[in-house]
Image (cartoon, rainbow, N blue to C red; front, side, top):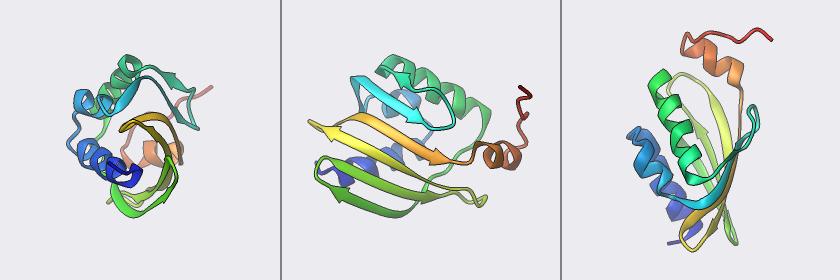
Length: 119
């Protein structure tokens, strides 16, 4: 599977809100770093992160573009509510070993009518 094909599978699985199936696309020691949060390390922790996020809001990822460069796939996405972002996925042996995502957390919280943390 090419990196782009794996990211297409990731999007389909993400849109099904199946945290277990989604986490199984990651290597056991993968890192998922959404830049508005601390990095999440390990498949079990990534599964927990997705479980928590899917319980808070209905999220839909619509592909705008997928680019490939060697072991990397880059996803440019939007959602039906107007949020946009991008993700960078490093793939090795048909598993995600590293992911970094860029999106506006404040806009996400407002769009989903979720509480805004006050630090």
